[in-house]
Length: 368
Ligand code: ADP
Ligand code: MN
Ligand code: MN
Ligand code: MN
Image 1 (cartoon, rainbow, N blue to C red):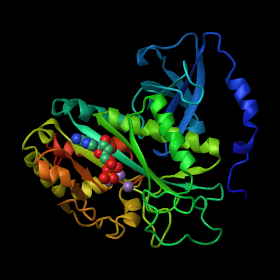
Image 2: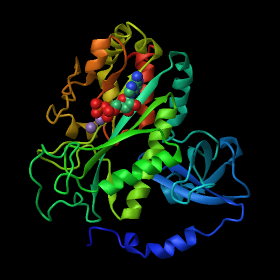
Image 3: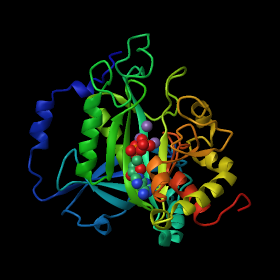
Image 4: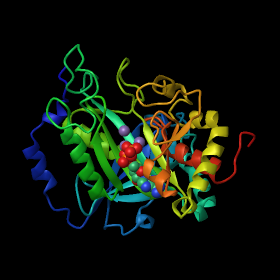
């Protein structure tokens, strides 16, 4: 099998001819939602008569749940409820991408609709002004599922030269990271930055700084854009937390967090309080921090490759081997934010941010 998809090799000059056609005042809206795996994204597009000026102008829609593993054959229609609107970087203005929540035929949130309870928690914690920034790591794979550009049947040289690397032998697939970055900017996703990661063909982008429910909404749309950009290039973005066994870094989704009180003078006290609360609920958080209730992170949080052991909670200033890191400048200034290094690359950011807010701000404990 070729390592790059056939579709990516179709004649793009032809594509450009059609994409450049005027739309006669009509607007394409692509609805994006999370399917019942809780991990994969789906989308479909419809025409609106005019450009919507806000999310309220986008009508609800539905889809056949059976086709996306989301329901049984009877009562199969599921509702798509638009929650956040972005610009479409693929077909450009005036077209939109719309992130949706999924409701079942009784108009209740589906099991995978983790946004519903997350938004409740964010509302309850609104007065704390909770800010987040999430660092999404991923690897690129060819269509053969081999890490992109790795020698066939072999391995590149050991880790060391690759993190933030430059040069054809040090980073693979920069076109994708760059294209994704621009696509996020155009779409209105709050992308913070990007860098090559420790394993060759591994990358990171950060989304933030976002307040409340904006964080997981923007990260899910950033993931959609990543998969969509990769589709154009004919390769695959893989968010598995430990995609290659052996002496290779896993992929995480470090979550940076602060409240208004933490950001103000003397805020370090509030950071320490929050860490104390997180310590008491380590097991609960591990449960919420990957796609399979902590199972995926067992492969990643080994205590090696700048991770802490999954069984032990630890925290420290400038310590990248800890569960929680206080950045050096935050320790020095006595205020700022902290980084939870435990979430895995395949985490659900609705679950991660909800758990942090409930534990650190809403006083929830193990007995709740
Ligand atoms: P690292 O040094 O861990 O690699 P990055 O530079 O990759 O950190 O990412 C830093 C993240 O911290 C960004 O996502 C940014 O939005 C977030 N961040 C910065 N300041 C704050 C803050 N006060 N509260 C919450 N998140 C913050
Ligand atoms: Mn980072
Ligand atoms: Mn990283
Ligand atoms: Mn980090």
